[in-house]
Length: 137
Image 1 (spheres, rainbow, N blue to C red):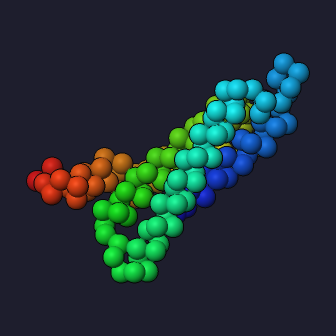
Image 2: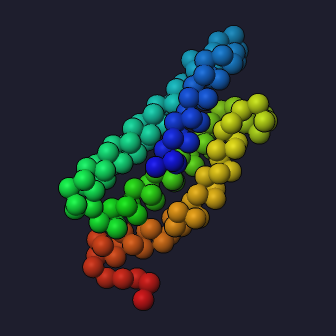
């Protein structure tokens, strides 16, 4: 899923930037809040990768369902957009410059969250699967 790749690219850019950017005499990556953001993103990206791995194995077994695909898309696109927004924030004013790619990823993900099926539509598909009751009819 391309969204997870975008999240990884943003994370890598944010990590590299935070190691180089000095704030109060030390790298931004040495600050508690920056480390929390990096740890949260690393965790969420890994969870998204594991979800895709499991989905791929279910597909290979022939047991994958549409609601499982919705779950992966819903989760991973949302996660990637949150990572892009977090890194854009970590970059400060540089987050909107053309020198860094996070802003481009963020804009692309804003469109992906719609054309891959909106977050709300995937939510309804998952809710239908879980409850057995369609909320959209």
